[in-house]
Amino acid sequence: MIKKLAKSIRGYWGATVATPLVMIGEVAMETTIPLVIAAIIDDGIKKGSIDTVWKYGILMVAMAIVSLIFGALGGWSASYASAGFAKNLRGRLFNKVQDFSFANIDRFSTPSLITRLTTDVNNVSQTFQMMIRMMIRSPMMFVIATIMAVNVNAKLATVFLIAIPLLVIGLLVIIKFAFPMFNKMLKKYDDMNASVQENLTAIRVVKAFVHEDHEIDKFVKTSEGVRKAMVKAEKIVAFNGPLMMLAINSCMIAILWFGGVQITEGIMTTGELVSFITYIMQILMSLMMLSMIVVMFSFARASATRICEVIDEQLDIADGTSDAVPQDGSIVFDDVCFSYAKKADNLTIEHLSCTIQSGETVGIIGGTGSAKTTFVQLIPRLYDVLSGSVTVGGHDVREYRIKTLRDNVAMVLQNNVLFSGTIRDNLRWGDKEATDKEIEAACRAAQAHDFITSFPDGYDTILGQGGVNVSGGQKQRLCIARALLKKPKIIILDDSTSAVDTATDANIREAFRRELTDTTTLIIAQRISSVSDADKIIVLDDGKINAIGTHEELLANNEIYREVYMSQQKGVE
Image: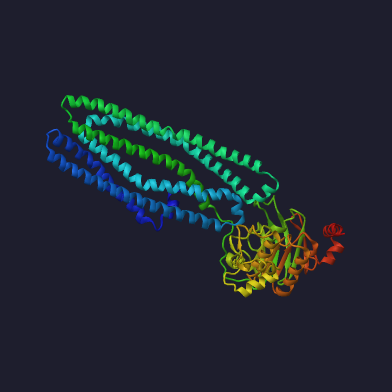
């Protein structure tokens, strides 16, 4: 795990290595100062030599300033290194998520990924900062201060040597029980983030149904879950502080007692006792810092495990190796089976075969759960087939490089998503080099130009996050225009005109027939009128093709199509 995370230090190794080196300088100064204090007391104050006091006093102040400078440099370099480490690690996670297929994303909830990119990365980077400062400083301080203390008075040093094993045992017990608690706490964070995200995403629905109180109660429950998990974890970690203070105070009492006895017996000088006490404090404080690092490491270990789960996630869809480009928009499904669970006994699409010629307009009709969306998502490899093959432009889709394939297949999803920025910026997702003329032409084809120009700022109108300041129908038309700007060989409209009126729907289809003569168009629709003039219509039923034909043929020969048509006609009447 450490090896995987260490790759994120790239570009910040200088600061990472410099930090412990600077800490060595700070430790060297701090462990030398007690000797100077002893000299001030024994050679200066005790003998009444003011010159000696001044000489060693100035030396001590200079050493303290140098120690301060080293400490400040160490703090700066550690902060710089940890911030860079966090940036790289967060970038690695974000880039990995961008490569996820829909199946990979399905295995991680969105709130969980957000927690891993934020809270978990912060936990790990804070521990990293503490480690590069203290993992050298504290052990080095412990070793040098112990040597110096033993050198001052070996017999008295046995007091803290007895306390150390007891502290280590207590710390190991705390870590053993704390780690599972931290894991549970982070999962509760996921639940709380899920509640927040769901509420903010659907805030208009919440208000429309006056469900604010329900959402508040739900959030309070998830927040309380985080609190309880945190309290359980902190209850265990809380023993660390009292344990350390008990050891420090017990050692100090014993040292003052035995040290005082040795001074009265003439075995030890007052200056030696003061310096010895300073070394003992340095030893115990370094142990306390090490215990804090170990506790933080236990917490960070839970976060690091979750981060590595994302890094180690095997991508369901591997990039193709061929440099081929689809020559046309022909599509062939050859005995395709698909399962979201990747199990042959739980198929969503079952032994489906069909051929769509380049330039055809194909309607797709079927009831809820008939796998219409799944069917079209296999074309741009948003999911991969379980068995069989999908061919586009004469090649299996798995042979193409994913970017090449998806650049030639434009898809307007059921959930129309727009991003913060201007309308023009959103449209240029289809083609970042598109001219204003090309943008206007795409918007005219999608029946969006008129409502865009009705805004005071026209194409420079700022859209809120998710396009909240345009209607559902306007959002759909903008998404269609964005897809048209790709100039794809295949365009897929997944129920993408459901929010527009029938006249606008008809105008969009007319523009498609007129301007996309060489583009294969697949239209998933609930309204028969949206597909009635298609070259052919595919009727799906429970993941299988029930029938293929024109509107007239299906109306005459297919019961499912006829029932849908008649029910809609009754609605019209």
